[in-house]
Image 1: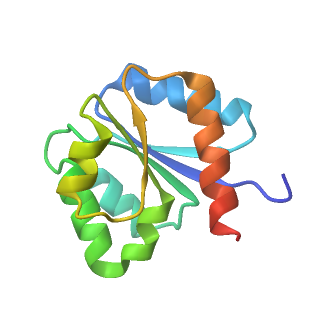
Image 2: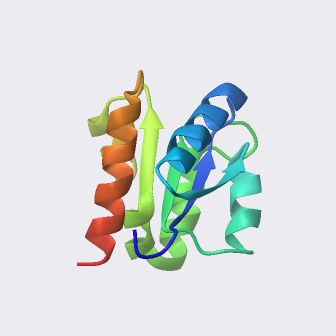
Image 3: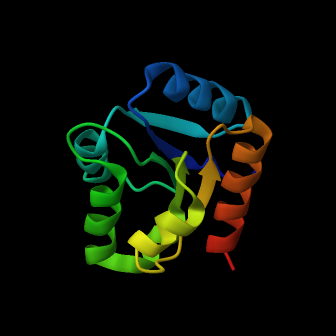
Length: 126
């Protein structure tokens, strides 16, 4: 990697959040964590992230509300989001009105997570 990419993992399950962080840091990424959508919004005010790995079902501000807020400011930024959810990708896409983001279904494969993060970064540089 030419430069270290920054990733924000937004997940209320601490064990999953830590697992994602460990796997992504092993791949050379800098990883920040947020336990819910409110904390994620605060972190976005302090830093720009190359990728956001976002759980949908969280307390305080869920992933759908987070993405709606994100899209209201600049919908193209949704290309940086990889959604993790047990809900079907079709339901997620329908609810988000076709905005551009990737999904990583639960239960997830860690190799798939790394592959999708790389693809997300590559797509932004095209």
